[in-house]
Length: 85
Image (cartoon, rainbow, N blue to C red):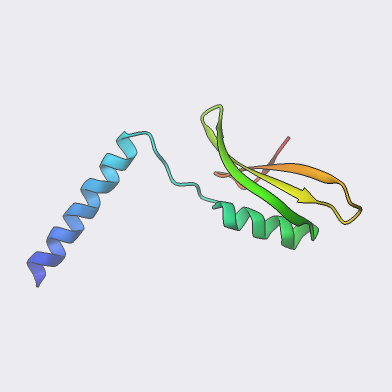
């Protein structure tokens, strides 16, 4: 049993190293979290979402309908969680 656990831990460590070397990274703020933040903060209706890579950074783009009927695109930096202009 201990050998299986050691093998799993070793495999996980090697996988994480391989993941980092291939220049892929995990965002601190997921797209779902970003959508929840927008809904909770501004009470917008979300129409569409996507994540794009801009200047080497992951940016969540959320298309919303405002309470007054306007359509807006909100960009959120996936690493910092801040709204990008």
